[in-house]
Length: 529
Ligand SMILES: NC(=O)c1ncn([C@@H]2O[C@H](COP(=O)(O)O)[C@@H](O)[C@H]2O)c1NC=O
Image (cartoon, rainbow, N blue to C red; front, side, top):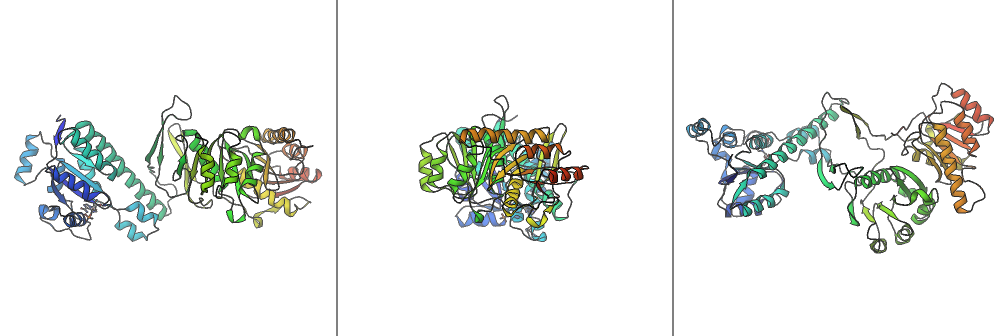
């Protein structure tokens, strides 16, 4: 194996021309001959560099709207020939094939074209064929050829040449080959996912997901687990696209919780007022609306002050100084908001460990998308839970109709319950959660936990009684038995929202009527596991 190989001839064919001229100039200065396709060659010539056209090497013009440029044995032979194989080299000589030592290719912007919402034919035209073919050839022959597919690697190539007397080492070529195959795989994943959507294929026979390393993580959910954060290129505002202003690097659990917090708070339209969610272990321990961000925060905090310690806070509005000040009164891991005022940033600057993230916007809760999770031997894929219930969707099933205020609280609690691990029970009053029971194997247990937490907080706040008394309550799934309704009544709830659909609905409704509760059915379930 030739460990260190000099670069004599490079083929450069790039759609993204960022950094191209500087890189090519640095290569030329090291005596590398440059070979290029149409647009790339033009850019290099305009910068005063000497370039050989691929068309002159192949003897064929670029044709068919660029569909055929580099697809030629003179190119692929130069990339694939084994330099230590006499027969390969003899064939190259016979057919006038010169070796290519470095391939620099970035592909037609297919992903960007799809993201812009381009028409079908436009997307098709942006599927690169010649580029991936060359990348895969060069990567296969990394024993002799260096392949570069990311602009961010240009400086690494030059540093490698500086380190090694203008040569490229074998480990470097191996690393580049791995990156190259991951790039073409991600590209084809994007193409096949787009096609599945375009033809309405919800369960394609083969599915490929791809990600780009955003951040290596110190560890995973626990210190003995290796971990990293990969992004999928989606522009959805959230933890993956946010700007971090201060604080330590986010951890695996921080990223998971921050995502849960921001996706939850984004359910609340900022034009209807501020909302704040506080998350612990991916479950909310307080969510509230308010006339100001600080009021929303304080009301969310008052749901469960004990659990809020070390939590993740999300706002659907700009983080202002007053709210930042209130947040700094206890230890918080992460705050995420669409934006933050300079005053808020200054206040946080004193808390070195507190991470502040801004996203520039809110994700659309109704947007379609996929979510997936791993199981032994495979993964489960489903549409993201973008189900939303509006007032006209509600069916009142009890004798008592919910009041206007109760209806507002029911829909608020329902929205929060969608983001609570099942079995989820959410008690709410005046658009603030007052008791949350999460992640229990029995719905009655979740009901009781929410009640107990509310009673504990009543003591902390010096209230004469728990705020669940007179509350509206949401259940993420139907009540299989009447005992859940009895437990809610015991907690003092006055109105209930739930999907309905149990075999024993009649019994459940009868119990609600007997206990004087108003109950509405949504016809939609929000399991979350
Ligand atoms: N068809 C081919 O033979 C071919 N060879 C290279 N390309 C692509 O053409 C682009 C560069 O084109 P230009 O140099 O004309 O700007 C690169 O993204 C490269 O991946 C091709 N285009 C698409 O398949």
